[in-house]
Amino acid sequence: MTIYSHIETERPPTGAEMERMGAFIDEVAACGKLVLTDGLLPSATGARVRLAAGKITVVDGPFSEAKEAVGGFAIFGVASKIEAIEISKRFLTVVGDGVVEVREMYAESAYERSAQARG
Image (cartoon, rainbow, N blue to C red; front, side, top):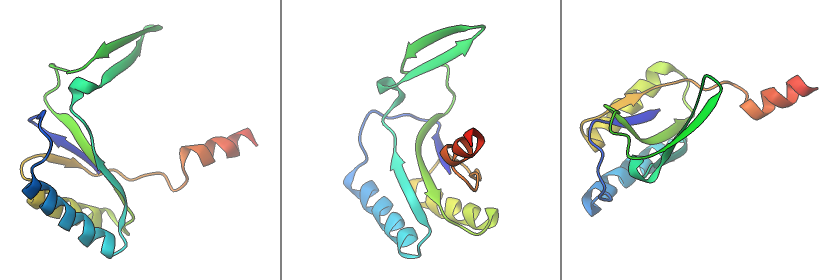
C-alpha cells in the first residue's frame, strides 16, 4: 500500500499520532501480516530524476505541482486484495484524511526475475 496525503507537513508526527500508529503497527504485526512499513520525509528533502526525450533532469523538492504527496508505504503479506483493502480502511481510521493505493507485488522480486532471465 502506498499512502498519499493532500497536505504535506514539515513537522514530525505528534506523540499521540505516533502512539496511535504504533498500536496499529503492533496489531498488524502481531497477526503476522506486516512485512515492512515506514513514513517518508517531506518532498522538500527529496529530488525527482526524470528521463524524457533522451535527456535526464534532476529537480529538487518540494514539488509544488503535486496535488498529492506520497507520505509512506507498507508491505503486507495478505491472502487477497479484499484483505489488503480492509487493512487500508483500518489504517485510514488511525491516520485520518488521505488516500491509500493498494497494489499487488510480483510473486518473485525483480532481482529474482532478472537473475532468472540472465540464466
